[in-house]
Image 1 (cartoon, rainbow, N blue to C red):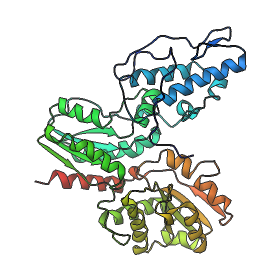
Image 2: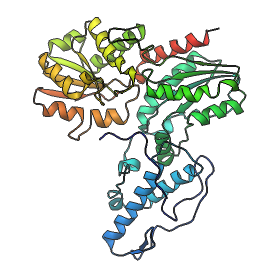
Image 3: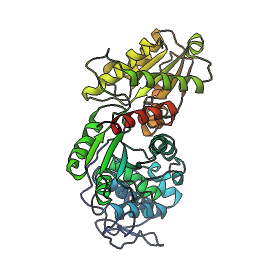
Image 4: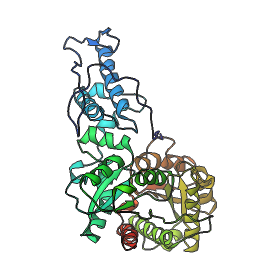
Length: 411
């Protein structure tokens, strides 16, 4: 179920698929999907005959095109490849769409309804002015989540900083390509956003990451930012959501306390309880699922569990998809919650955005989703999932506002 975050570009895209268009410039080649007689030219130039073979060949062609844009590096052909993949998908019959399967391709790439992309704002406008607040997110292709979580944070930051132009960058090119191909929405990657700032004559640049912690993704974005230090009069980076990491599992801070209170209060409210204590009396525990990481910042998850204990939130457990730290694995959390006597479980993401991990790894129907694993354990009478990201919670948005204000005020 887990998706690879970075995939290697296919050695070649099938001949006759690239067309001009998209968000930038690309080179194109003309081609045909097939003919009404049910014949198709394969990449090797062989003819495919018969309806079943023809349908599979058409689906495989689209799968190859999707795999070609499921990559972490943008290149001069990306815009054309995104457009070609969508046009090839649109040309398939419903039956052919169900046959699409590749290294990363499946029918959900274009076919899954994740909400209305038109409600989003890519914030890739020029006319920035001298002061830019660049909000950097990993990103998500789930449209409703992007609007509620990422745009929610960006809107709060713009409202709090009317003298600054809020712009957006995503660090996942895979997600950028997905959104561009499927919805025609163009979102800047880090290099594009920083180049846009330079061309617009920005003097003062503030970076606000929406990342949860000082992990690998945060380090990578800061490497990119550092390469542009001499392009502006001042460059400042604000803290991610949980603030400084700290040395061990017992180190907590005001940010972690605020996050713990905000997400728990929202989870209790959406579960229909008047208080966390009322949920405890009803035998209900809340499991907050983070991503997990092998980075040294993984101690942040242990610190969040410490924070829950410090607040007296005995029926709140921290877990991670990756099971790093080890005591945050799904199996470990199942055992802990059951040993504590809880019979009902409410799952909720400890993630800024309720994207693929929340919808699939946490709440999906596959047997290895957390919801399925908690249910299959036979230790609980009921398991529910709340699919909502941290970014949609006003108190969480305020933490980002405070982090931004702290660096803007720095001399």
